Image 1 (spheres, rainbow, N blue to C red):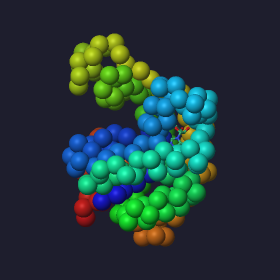
Image 2: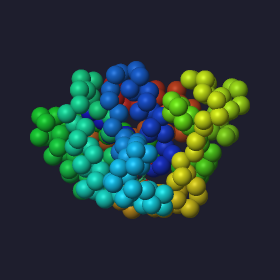
Image 3: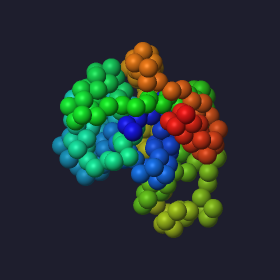
Length: 215
Ligand code: AMP
């Protein structure tokens, strides 16, 4: 089953994608993670997109479509989770064509709905373990022992995304409403859209996603 998780920044797409990977053996394809990895490894493309990402703007369709195209031959018997892709109508069309060229299709597009005030709160407080990527939050989920990751035990290696600040967030939200939200109508018209309430704790939201996928 190939699915898209769609929703504004901070809706919890990455968190829920990680759960689907762990529980169903699906393969997560996050263009945001791929772009951050390109920056860390210092590739030419990584350097090219760094400032754009830090401002909260979208990188070009060509770059992200290329990144996804490279991954579609990966072994994914349980299917792909597209997380943060597509973000424009051109990307959505390209994804449809790429899947078709591999003899595959999309089974569901899950829209995670979260109101804007909640997004700002979620995003401005979040941080992750630099070793294993486990997510935390200043208000909602502090590590049990200050400075130490609950999952892998690494100490003092927490990091915050450079684009998780109020200015970049405003730009990211604008990009979502301007460029990405039209995809909701696009997939509704194709009969693939499932809407779920993205507010609540991680378990509750995971249950709603499972209901949307299996129901
Ligand atoms: P994310 O981790 O999904 O929030 O993405 C972080 C940043 O990477 C975004 O604010 C964009 O600058 C860039 N990005 C990630 N995915 C895409 C995409 N599909 N199209 C354009 N830009 C993207």
